[in-house]
Length: 245
Image (cartoon, rainbow, N blue to C red; front, side):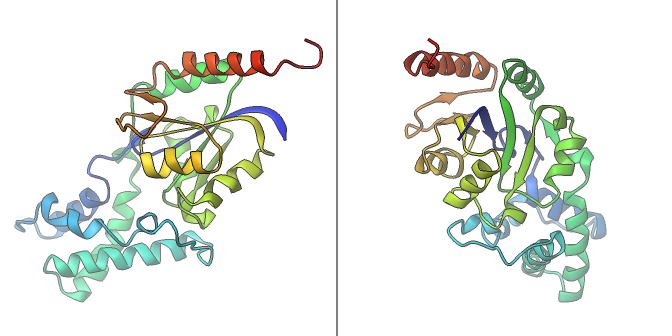
């Protein structure tokens, strides 16, 4: 076990967001090619509620080892959506590839305003930070493009890890990279994937931007996280003094 102090951050809904997410990308491509179509986000969203790997987090997908393989599976989901919305199979196949590219457009991704100040403050307090997210293979590049790279030591995306949070292996793989640090926290906005998943493998967790009675620690935003973790770390060190104390 190392003496490092590590924070694992979720990404979507915690650090960054893409308005409309998958449904918006699918709809934007459809409307660009069929300007007169009457399809709305409400029509698209039901098709996005199943089929992604994180919708079945108990099932590993370790056989998927490249971004191309991962996106092939996701484009099949897009094809089903476009066919369900009235496109021919040929149209759907073409649009699915475009939706893939649309989702990756960097100008569609944004950080919450409290992210950089919080990560900067935690770095100054000696915390190492990593991102552990159910996300696309290109997450490391997205993190860099959004200016987060100076604050994080690693980016773990489920797309290439082969496991989706809350699967225990998603957390255990990340822990192994950091040599099982002495102090570790998980911070995220999803009670099932981030909070309960982390706690199941012994990692304390903080729920942010959401409320849920099952979470032991809840904050509406990130602004108070540095002070809270400093207090927790001081309390831990006081209750477990070193040999020279």
